[in-house]
Length: 235
Length: 277
Picture 1: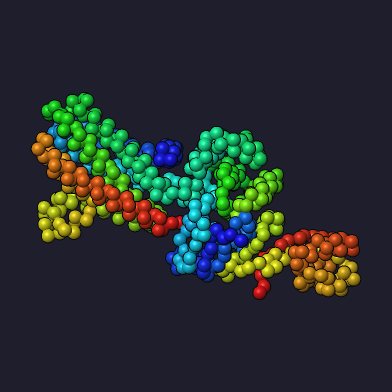
Picture 2 (picture 1 turned 135 degrees about the vertical axis):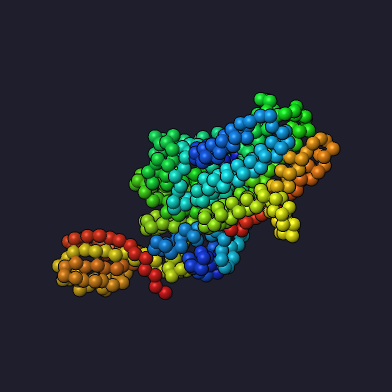
């Protein structure tokens, strides 16, 4: 059934033309990122991960509005499984984001954009980091849909605020250490990007995996919250 | 009588605006419940509550049986970027049908509803009536336990309406519970076993829920004098040679026959929801 739901979402998305703007942003960012060489390996991948996080937010935000609420009702009644229905929406976008992550990670490796050769641990750290932050972007953005937020304007402003503070979280903590506990509630984007950018060899892998794990736990909590809220709010 | 769903004192409001208040009703296996009421009385909201798609603000929705399969025909079917065939395949698969079963069902239902020529046209380009047919077909792909029909015939041609009634009667025979909200009185009269009227934000049991209003022209003094004494006549309004008579639905045919026999000129026959305790 998951395969069927993914195909249904794919058809909906591909025919909506809502993918055009995020795709253009992706290509533009791609061009900017890889316009110069040589590049630092993990620094670059830290930047691509942050970029994938933002693209994930943008794609999810528009994707969540594609299916008319009446059609959502019909899909849920036909499936008789709300959990699967909502989970597959997230899974579908995550698959798209993961494909984008693979391309953005492989491209500079294949075309020799780096100042040194990329090791296997670099590659896996980069790929995982991009995919993990992609999931985080999806899970943050799904919560700002029009069924949970009646005012689209408020949802957009709230989402942009969360994204902005998540991205600059580390910079704020360095400047104002007293507010660090308040900022830890934000998605750990800054934390993951920092650990990725400073990753040098296998010795530092445990710290990196801790960062990935924190992001995955955070995403899982948001995903569970999203499904719960959608089921409680209904139509 | 096996109850499938029971609503107990159910109320629903949107941001403080009460749509329905303290509604009590039960969905009984194999029974067809008609819901009538003017526009904006909360029929669609009530349908969504029965389906479990809308949260109640107060009261309870009780499921009396496990795994109840519900199919739903919404009043406003969305303009989708799918052809009817693609869409129905998706819905059929969601319902757990096999591809061959879906193909077979689609062919049968497309024939019944005259949809063969439109099966590969994007739904968003179809007329309102044809879109509503797609909505009806998706609900009939597999046999549910409860079929919720919210204005199922809006915009549909006469042939499709008749076939639709035949299909629903077949479902009734098979023991499907049907909840029908519509403006077409003849559909309610033909299919409903029980009717509730949504009025003043709450549900009232059926009591002369439909009063026939016969508007006719006549200068026959005899008919004018005896009119109020005829069986089932509630009241009559006379203005010059125009007469409006309000009659109970079960007596309307007999009255019409009498009027025609007296050479009265029938201008219109309508039904109005007229609830009285």
